[in-house]
Length: 138
Image 1 (spheres, rainbow, N blue to C red):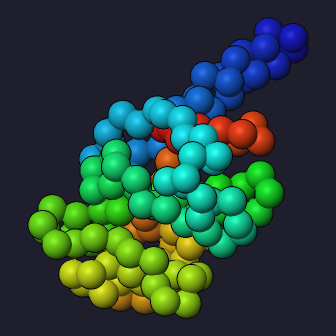
Image 2 (cartoon, rainbow, N blue to C red; image 1 turned 30 degrees about the vertical axis):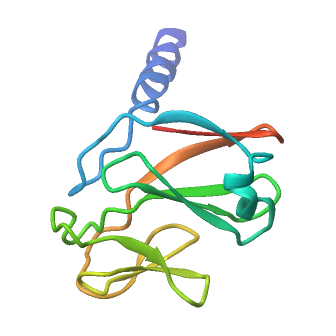
């Protein structure tokens, strides 16, 4: 019995660490820090603030949800990411993201599709915040 529990525990540990693979957008290595006291990232000092960064496939958008939670998505649209002008931008409402090419709209909180031809959510990247610096990685 102990061997069975040990086996399943080890199995869950090993399979639970797999990286997320997006169905349409290719994986690019992302692993860097930004410091919120840097003037380039001052918009992230406020809840609901966001910044555009380089990295990933088409750049990144980072959004501050609350004191400790940041959301980071690739700016490549899951519907037409290979098109040169298919970029994800913050919508005027501050709660959704929109593709300039296909018009798909995505929820800022989880990257899911709200409207448009896109079938898949935005590609996300992990974040870790220690109170001073934000790590963005996959």
